[in-house]
Length: 121
Image (cartoon, rainbow, N blue to C red; front, side, top):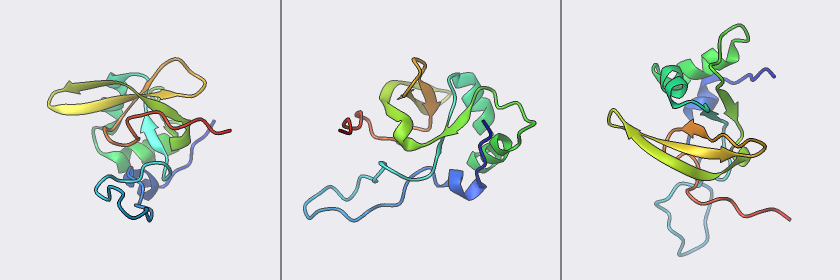
């Protein structure tokens, strides 16, 4: 599967805020939709891929000849929630469950909601 993303799409790891009902917490970003999220089953590979920033990682993933290190850009709807967290070298990371696999994918913290999204009927 080839993933074609522009650097701008991946740079915007946080979705724009949508209008909310009166009285809702406006300080929390709306993370239900938005651009794809770069994730890797291996934290070491995620750190290597993201070393030069999200734009460079997106360009790397867009190159079909590059070694993607098992990483990919996934739609936010593919994530089922945060299953693990770690801080390494002063940087925090979240590991999010992904539909259709038992391996979580390491992502930037705060990219998706902490709790699993409600099941659609």
